[in-house]
Amino acid sequence: MSNAELKLPDHDPAEAGAFVERMAETVNAAAVTVMVSVGHRTGLFDTMAQLPPSSSEQIAAAAELSERYVREWLAAMVTGGIVRYDVRRRTYNLPAEHAACLTRGAPLGNLAVAASAIAVLAGAHDRIVECFETGEGTRYEDYPCFHQMMAEDSGQTVVDQLFDVVLPLAPELPGRLAEGIDVLDAGCGSGRALIAMAARFPNSRFTGYDLCGEAIAAAQQAARAAGLKNVHFEQRDLTGFDETARYDLVTTFDAVHDQKDPKGLLKGLHGALRPGGIYLMQDIGGSAKLENNLDFPMAAFLYTASCMHCMAVSLGQGGEGLGTMWGWETAEAMLQEVGFAGPERTTFDHDPLNVWFVSRKT
Image 1 (cartoon, rainbow, N blue to C red):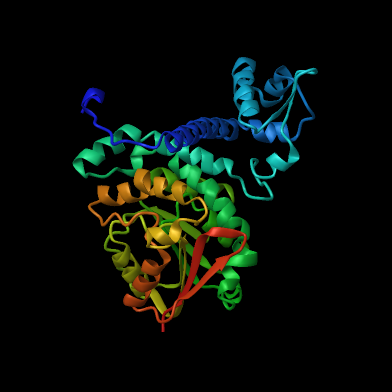
Image 2 (tube, rainbow, N blue to C red; image 1 turned 90 degrees about the vertical axis):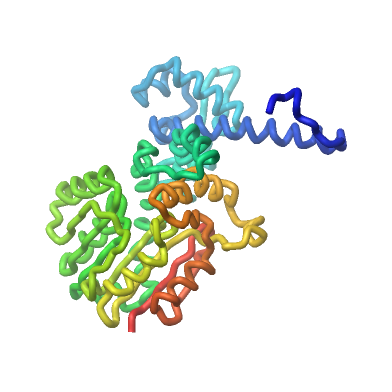
């Protein structure tokens, strides 16, 4: 439909004007988000966090990057409120309070990783527009660099708190891992969680499966570099997964909702556990009901990630397309339906986006 054919209803000029301003701010913030991703990928935030107020030439030299590009990026960061600029000295500074959530290993978590997710998802923009018309889905290959971004996200949401917070959700787990058990991470990505556990618990045996060949190759290389002999990674489609009574611990980290058949996978994972085995599941902690997510942290980001990736890749496999916000209620119900009695649900104040379930096989 052409613009000339659009017939819009009458509107309140004041409300419409206020919304124009809001949309302009939204577009501007989106542009800043893209440049935050650039700052993360190039290491500029990490570099600037270690520098005193510096010129664009000094920053570019320290980061070993082109000064002209760095100068333009700095301009976007200054006008976006990320970097401070001293007009008289012509120097730029990343305040420590901003670096606290924009650098690798940042104490408040690195939100630049989320910004990089937007850039990765935008790469599939044209394909998603086609899918709106056809109802088809996407493939993991449609998202270059996706597994690197997910590895970084997993590094701060899972690996960094694995031993102090996550594994103790099942109090007996650390002791059993120390003694020696068999562990599967289904949808392991590049394997950071498994590699960390394999290094900490040499008496246990670890297996990681993932559909993405690029992620598995990265995991295998990292395991070799660490000299680990007790971890095995394999590219594998988990559709119809049916190993029987092989593992004492199964984990999934943000991996179930975008499967072709989430309930079928959970049933397979239940069957893969030995009696007394534990299933530790992390997923997005939003509700299945939109009205319950109106105040959920970063809800618009999560629905966007769902539309652009999680829902789409599930549909691309011929799946249900439950999406990122399939809801903790859905997850809990499925766990019970496949045979887990009374899954224990936990959320953390420091990590409001995620929910954790500990389920035991009787």
